[in-house]
Each structure stands twice: as structure tokens, then as C-alpha cells.
Length: 503
Ligand SMILES: N[C@@H](Cc1ccccc1)C(=O)O
Image (tube, rainbow, N blue to C red):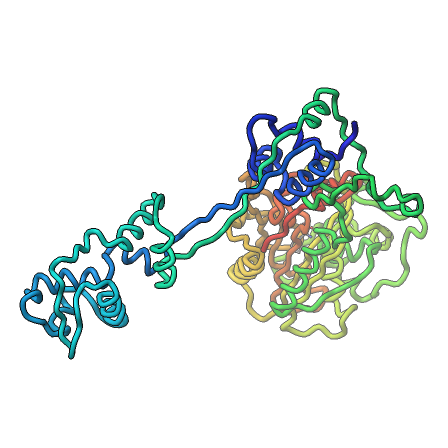
């Protein structure tokens, strides 16, 4: 025999000798009672099961009933107080009895009417007289209340129950309990073996046309079943953080710079007073372009001033490198190794017109380095470039700006380490504490531009600047321990899907 799953479960849980309640079966089979009830009636129709119904009454005290169970009925309290006051001899005014009987408000009315109803005495013209032969200890209503209160509501007469119900001291409820017992046919069926019938997942035209739909068991929806997680489109973690960085910097009064990814070495390095034999300028460090491999249009006057800064320095105390300076090299094209090339173009008045202080600029753009790929280095990464041009700037301004910037991302533990850059003096590297490893990781580099950079550009005030790594900021924000989880060819999609960006 083949039966739907729930029916099989009911049959297997039912007994032939002892009625079992639907709710017990529901608990045991881990099904809901409605499904079990339906299955039980279907089995009863098939003659495999007997279903019996038993109606039981449950009685519960109302709040007032509970109160009286604890503090006695108002009429009983009135009777006791009256006896103590000697009201069996002389009628006592009600007023005098209220306090000793602990009655007030509506309880007074309740006490008086029930006192009279139960024949505890008489009330006339505001005075109470009692019948000394009454015994409130055997008050049936009081006894019933305490019996119900202590859950032993056996043997309470229906009259008393009705009276207490009228007084709204209790509520009566009828509950129907259904129990099942296996019939002989049920037992036989079980012994012969019952299989779980296949369930139909979808109603088809064929099922309808053949009438078969009436006999099949439809699968129930399981709204708690595990389902495949569907990942909707989502802005990349890094892009989200980049957007946030931009908003923060705009909020701090900065404008956004842009410029070429491929640029002349002049803007990437020479304008920055980077000696032409600096290791970062060798073919190991940079991605050079071969076609075209150089540009012609450089601002001639600036080229001359930069050449002279490199060769002999600027002003009185600056020396320069006293080495040859090759203009051809300065015209060579490469992917920018940092976005400080943009700062140079802006400071030179090349990009945003006349550049008078005060100015604040930033960019969140890609830089390219021929580094060795590892957990903290990528060949291309995003730099958060920034510059502030103003009359009087100090290291304090630099630190204050970083403190404020990182604070917006909830990062408060940042460290400054004196550093060397050919183009800034003083220079500082920045470190932040990784949230999961606890290690200090380098998050940026900064400083105040040297006169050898500023003078050729025609800038005669202070300029502080920095390059912060967006990916390192992202590591601090997301807890990523490997930069390659965030971007590159090995990104961990699961990490990106679930990464929490908190700030
Ligand atoms: N260009 C530097 C960052 C920097 C920019 C401006 C001033 C000082 C430092 C780097 O890539 O590390």
C-alpha cells in the first residue's frame, strides 16, 4: 500500500491498544497539528484508524477570582468583621466595618449584595446585622475558588461553577481532544508494509484531465527549506570604499583631480625632483610604453627650471644632483607609478588654470608598479592622492588631516614614522592597525614638498601632500588579510559577496 508521507507517519505512531492524542502524534512526528488531523481523518475514511473525540472543560480564574482566592471573598470578609465588631447583638454601621473588612470601591457593593444573597445577615438603613449561625469557612464559592486556584478543581458542583461564572470570577472553556487508535485493518496494513507515495510537485494539465489529481499527494511547500543563495549585483567593495573616500574628502573641502594614466616621466618623476638614476625609474620599477614611447609637448620653461633644479638646485642652500639630466628620458612615456603626477600637473597650473593658494585637491585613481605580487602588493592599485596648498603649513596640519580622514572610517589607531622621499621634507609613512591580525600595516606616505619641487613650479607657499593606498584602507575596513582577496585575478568572490563594510 502506498500512502502520503504524513499518513504513514500517523499510522506508524498510532497504537492499536492505547488511544494517542493528535497533539502527542504531532510532537512525535514533528508535524503541525493541522496536517496530522487531516491525515488522521483521511486514514479514518480509509478504515485504517479510529478517531475519537473527547470534550473536556477547563476552568480558569479571572484576575478578580485569583484575588479573592488569596484574600477571601468580600462578603466573607464583611461577615468576619461584623462578627468581631459584635454585630450579632447590635447592628453596626457599614462605615465602621469597611476598614476592618478591607473593603473599598466596587468591593463594597459586591460584599453587600453577596452577603445578603448568602443569608449572612441583613442590611438595613446602612447597618449590618449578622446571623451568628452561618459558617463562612464552609462557603462553597470560597472553597471552589481555592480549589481551582490550587488546580484541584474536582467535585465542584455545576451550580457553584455557574455562580462563580456569573460573578465573573472564572471562565469555562471547552476543548476537544482527538485521539486515534489503529483499527484491525490499520494493523494489517502496517504489517504488510506501507510505502510513502511519491508526492506531486506541480499540478499538470494531464493530472487535471485524467482526474488523477484527486488521488495524488501534493508536496507541501516547505518555507523553511534551505535554498540556493542568489547573489544580486552589488557594487564592488573597493568601489564602495573609493566612493566613500571621495565623499569624505569633498566633505573636507577638497576638489577632485584627474589626468592621464600614461604620462611623461617628466610629470611622474622629474618634476618631483626624482633623480634620473633613482631605482624606481629603472625598467624594473616601471611599465614603459613602446608605442608611442615619448611625447613632444612639455612646457618648455618648466622643463628648463626642472633641469636646473636637478643640476644645481634652487635658492641658496639647495645643491641639486650635479648629474646629467636627460630631457629625452623626461619625455618617455610610462604608466604612472603614483598619482603624484596629477598633483604636479595641477601645481604647475597645467590642469586647473591658475593655481593660487589656498587649494585642496585629491584623486582616487590607479597607479601601476612593477612590484612582486604578494599579500600586500598588487601591480596596479588605487592611490588616494591629496594635496593642500596654503601659506603656512606644518606637520601638525598633515597629521590633523589624516586623523580626521581616517576617523571617518572608524580608524583611530594610526602611526606616523619619519621617512625619506626625494620630493618631500619632512616625510612620513603612515601605519594603521589591522583589525584581525593586530599588525601595523603601511597605509600611506606623505610629506611637505621641497623647494626643489615647488620653486620650478612657481609655487611660493607651502604644499603638503600624500599618497594613501585605497586597498590598505579597505583591508583595515573589511579585515581582508590578503590584498588579492579584494582585487586582481585571484579575488575571492565569497569574500566580496559577504564583506562587511563598516564605518
Ligand atoms: N607618491 C608617494 C606618496 C606621496 C605623495 C605626495 C607626497 C608625499 C608622498 C607614494 O607613492 O608613495
